[in-house]
Each structure stands twice: as structure tokens, then as C-alpha cells.
Length: 119
Image 1 (cartoon, rainbow, N blue to C red):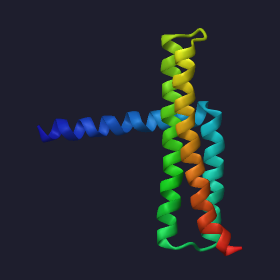
Image 2 (cartoon, rainbow, N blue to C red):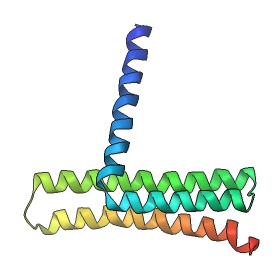
Image 3 (cartoon, rainbow, N blue to C red):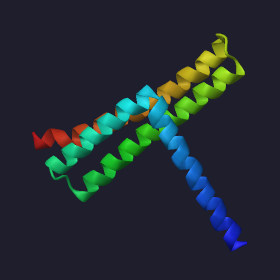
Image 4 (cartoon, rainbow, N blue to C red):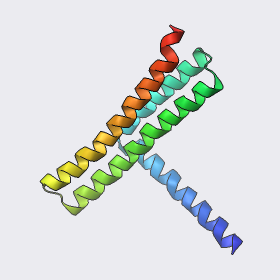
């Protein structure tokens, strides 16, 4: 039993890594956010931010990229289910995009709280 549990977790991790690389390779928004994440990470090293600031920054980066991944999945499912224009599908996509916007705004606020005092 324990062996199959561990094997299942390893397979799950394999699929998660494949999915993350697929997102990075195919989604321009994820690519842009990854560049921003690398830039803000470099800023963290440059400004020698505290452990708490690192935690908040890492959480914000993970939040934005994760929600963007979910948004991509929602859009792909919606397009698969109804490839033609549909008002309800449009609303679903708008809501998913709105969630990304909220996460991104939260990340910008966190970045401002961390970095504005350093200037």
C-alpha cells in the first residue's frame, strides 16, 4: 500500500512538472510573468530583503503564476467545449482573467511595500 502511494505521488509530481514546462513553453503570459519573477528575485538579492519579505515575495510570485495557469486551463476547457463565441463562455473567461488581475495587483502591492522604502 505505501509503495503504491509513493509511486502515485511521484507520478503526480511528474505530471505537475510536465504541466509547468508546458505552460512556460506555450503561454506568453506565463513567459512574461516568469521574466518579471526573475527580475524581482534579482532585486531581492540586490536589496538584501529580509526573510519575511522573501516569503511574501515568493508567495506573490507563486500566486500570480499559479492563478495564471488555472486561467489558461479554464480558457482551454472553455474553448474545447464551445469553440465559437458564446456570451456565457466569455463571462467565464472574464472571471478567470479577473482572478489573475486581482493576484497581479496583490503582487504589485506587495512589491511596492517591500521595495519603495529601499529607494
